[in-house]
Length: 316
Image 1: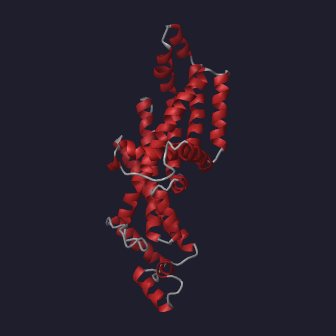
Image 2: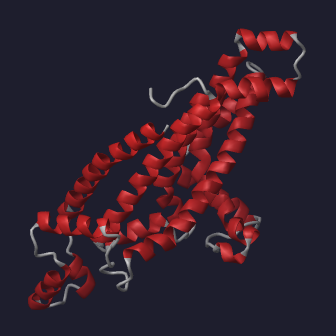
Image 3: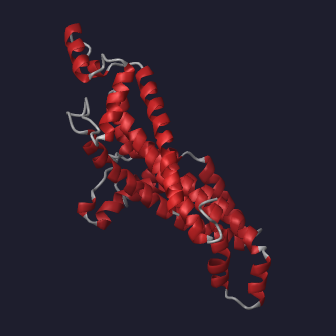
């Protein structure tokens, strides 16, 4: 176990190096000048040159990259150049909470709905319920989440007034006040992931239901609930866990559109604003942070494999 964890952590280093180099190059290839964004187009050439020098933009790219990496290794993420001079760590810390709340809430809804409907669809294979759930799955895969979100907003916010059109409240406001504005965004964000997870659950459960040990359990008189949950679902979990991990990464990376729609001050809004303002340090750090989260989620998925099926050894 420890050897495997060390290997995975060491393998993360080249991934972070490659990602950091790629994002460093890409954002500097994009048109725009951070100094001009700060001072405006009417600024004189001398003023712009002075600001570029103070920001280190006049240095060779390799030196800029080296300084950035060196500062990160010392725990200094730098100062945002356009966000009122706030530390990058503070900006990311303030924006990650709404994004994680939205993503986790979305995944809880997706997993609960998908496992339930996927199991029911497999259990009633070929029936009307199975066809109805298949139609829901196709709808979830086909409809863009932002379009689905607009529909939810119109019905449940504008017409019924059950939920706010937009906004976000921190944990300090209380559990209900925190999650109430996130219901519609979470459902919108999880639509496609729910459909994919539902399809995988149905396929995995169907495969296990045809196994000999399930037929033996039925012959022994095992109850319906125990048969589906304890015997069938547990043996169908491995591919389902893989899809859950991929869905979490996808939801985390794709939250920007939903956050913008519902005016949630999360990572998505921060990176969109940073790109428009050419805030290099914030963009680079966010991309590295998301990469680290993806690596962590992949590691958790691998560890869950061993919990679900002890026959799997991490060394392999």
